[in-house]
Length: 222
Image (cartoon, rainbow, N blue to C red; front, top):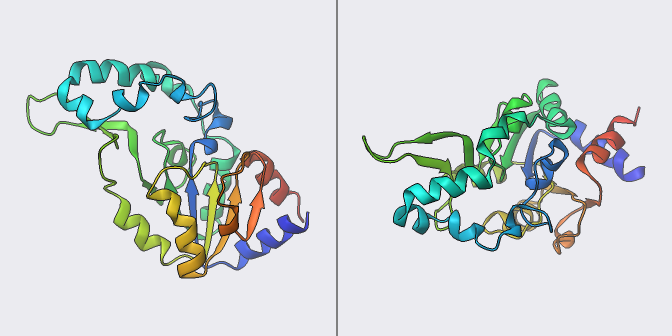
């Protein structure tokens, strides 16, 4: 309980809060994560199907697998959960909060957050790179660079507090964000993840909880 009290006090005093979210931020909405036994990576070919090279070689087959992997026809059924709403509420309270998300589901925006940087793109849209060409997904594929990387780094270097929610911190360059925040910037760093990441040494506070449990813990403090 003391950790929750300390974190709540830090959030109340913070001027700029940055939140890094991964798949675990959306699992409580029913969306499977990538790296668990039953996650999207259960198919060993997923990385190949979602690569830029595969899109360039076989665009029609790419779109077939893309729709299957991301359940495009039923994706609208997923709704923001308590974690998404909590972040939106912080913003509504006047906090300068920016979300750097690795998720492509758009649930932070649906939950009410206005300042969201989609590091890996979004499922919500696609674009035509040239008239009469097959649509290009607005999701970052394997082999792509991160178009929002510089915007994310700019925000990171301005932050007082970095909260990391529901990510295994296995994929670079995002996996280096906590170390940069802690060692280079001197920000307070907070990790909320059910499983250990191997980067606990980069955090001032570690909560091995579901995000909903973390929010409940903060909310229970009067």
